[in-house]
Image (tube, rainbow, N blue to C red; front, side, top):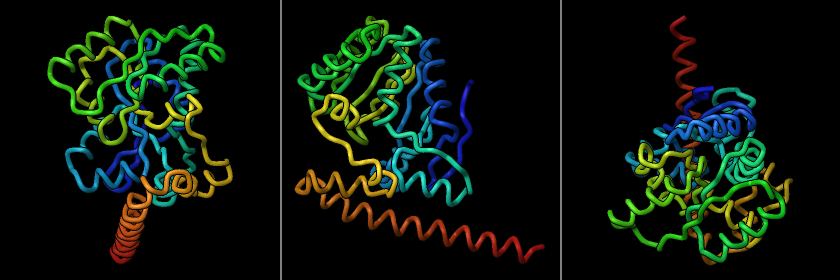
Length: 260
């Protein structure tokens, strides 16, 4: 499996295929130490891409760009009449860890606070005793210097890791992975808040809320002070973006009918 097909929504090429297809691709590339990266696309990331063409290029340059957020998934299925399933970073991280253990691949954890990394190590030791986590790094919350970037590459390369789970927040983690492609000899997966969930620092919305595209509301209830502005403006902008794409597709279909 060299790659997965893509379908475009909002100017972003989202990879399609089953959840297992995505995990299998990561494991295959990991075996090869293929320098590559995976973006898990949600509404926040999508709207960052609308405002910044360079960031859109980062997402479109990813080896996999998964339908992470339910609004992205629903849009993909609505506009392309697909039956695509969700491939969320929160689900991808534990699935990849389990698959890595099964196939004898090692993992490096990059990002997050050290206390979170320690909790991940503790849980992984219980749930995946044969999984090799060959290194962790909690970088400072600022842009790395050239020297620090070089040290990061050397640290990961020397660890021998096949896979790197990355939690730096959007858009920082996606930009970091794009900059490291061709330098880090591993598959890099930007999973963001999945670190906090796996460490049991944060809790996840109930399944019914996830399926109803209400996971954002659950997170807003947990962190209203931090998230209310983001969700108010970002979600409203996304709804307008969705309307424009839906209207554009309707016009295209009408024009095609007229030319027949």
